[in-house]
Length: 298
Image 1 (cartoon, rainbow, N blue to C red):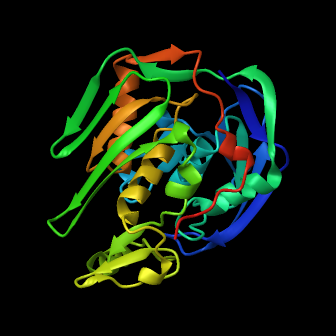
Image 2 (cartoon, rainbow, N blue to C red):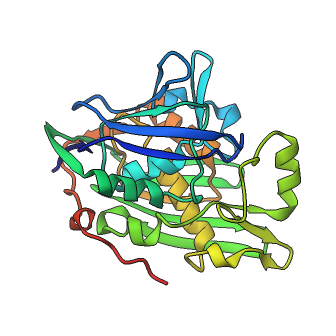
Image 3 (cartoon, one colour):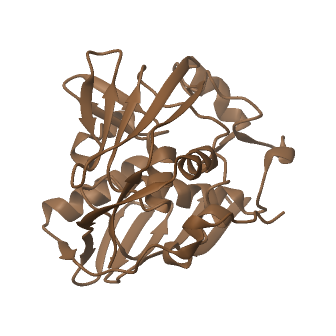
């Protein structure tokens, strides 16, 4: 059992948006108990978009996750949502002056560092969770997700991009290893896809400092890598952000193969549409590591 958590004071971050290439300003504010996570477009008359799966635009969530309400959207929310999930935060208002979050270094670590600087306020309201009552499987072509009932969150994630890039990893959020094992994992792309993405108006803010680029002979910029198996770790980072788009955290034992933002979203929607989620009032407390500096393996 744990209580709801928010930030002790606001934090601000500035940076370049990955796809638009524009500079954006972000302010993350404490919020009251049971208010959840929401985004506010300060450049659009403070238009509020709850961080809920029903507001995800599937068509716009191929390379990142996009929330949209009444024609106004916020793009690339997954790295921040992953940090929120990994840091056990429940109630926040996120103000942004543009349509896309900053890419920062391509991972979630800058958000975690900002959260640590702010500090956390425990709130006098118990936090409940979702899980499932039985094994649930969901697939589309070669993509697959399953979830089994559990009181914490663990995932086995497998990726495969042809025969040259196959990785898998087991990760448990409750063991307190998000910061050391997942948060530093940067986004990645293939060199052959960059020109196509830019012709579509995407990846204009991408660089060799905020994305790992894979060429025919391997990684072009290995100096920015933190982990040898960084690609699957980043896919877990994305997954943790995407599944946090509910009104309370989702826990369970997950297995994922060849997932992606739109597929993760359709899985969550499937759980809701089939009424497969069950409330869980008791779950492990916040890991002790959240109050301590964590060394990063090198």
